[in-house]
Image (cartoon, rainbow, N blue to C red; front, side, top):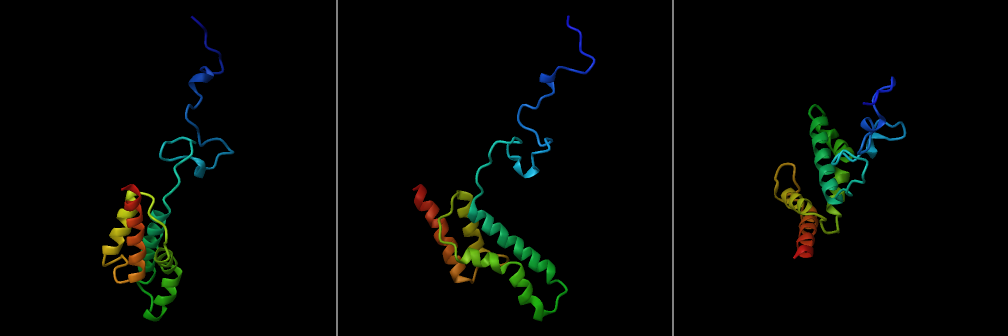
Length: 137
């Protein structure tokens, strides 16, 4: 039987085996939350990011205009969702995932919080979804 050193248990039992965010050089953003490791995460889907940014912008617009005079709404729109709507309207690449294609089409069909009625944005999203489907067929 071996005696235990007064300094504590053996080091092998205390060393992390899959990375740690406690190291002073490691920023939390560098941690891959999907695997709880410092392994590289998959690249985010740019179309999904654009759609989420648009939805966040709309939510912020609705929050900020709750008690704002109607004549200030355009200013708030320009600060919140319009830049993201512009990104969606100018989108010219196929979706990179089935989820992005699905969200693009869903955005076209939604009356409230969607892009229904904005023909240019709808066309861009339908083309992105079609581009994905065409690529996997």
